[in-house]
Amino acid sequence: MNISYMAIPDLNISVLEFIDNSCNISGVKRVDVISKKRNREFTDVRHLICYFLMQKLDNSVKTARFMNLDHASVLHAVKKTNNLIIKDKNFRQKYELIKTLI
Image 1: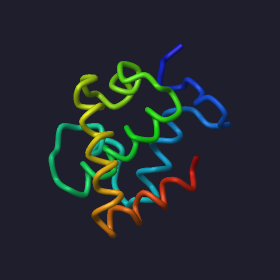
Image 2: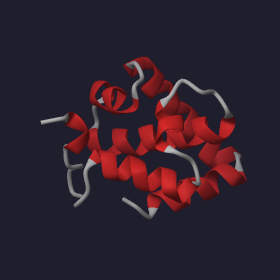
Image 3: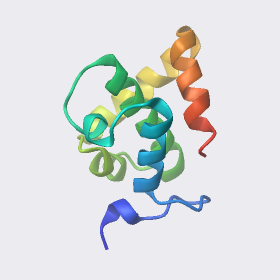
Image 4: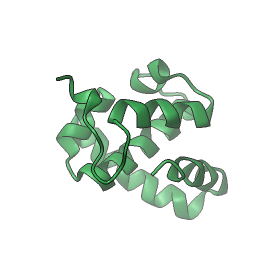
């Protein structure tokens, strides 16, 4: 079984569905979010997805596999997301939108 189809604990959706839904809500394509592109519109969504997956999976290695990253990048994304939720109003709005999926 491909790990992308693994269900997220306590939710009725797979990791892949969560990633797709997050991208749709944010108006970006999954291929751009999973890529190495560093445009803010993609990195914000990428960081938020990592943040929520880490909350549910509590495993940076699994989250990294889903997002085509290394585990250190996932940990950085979580730390940066925590800071941006507090400091950046636009980022917080994206956070609240994606949070509705959880």
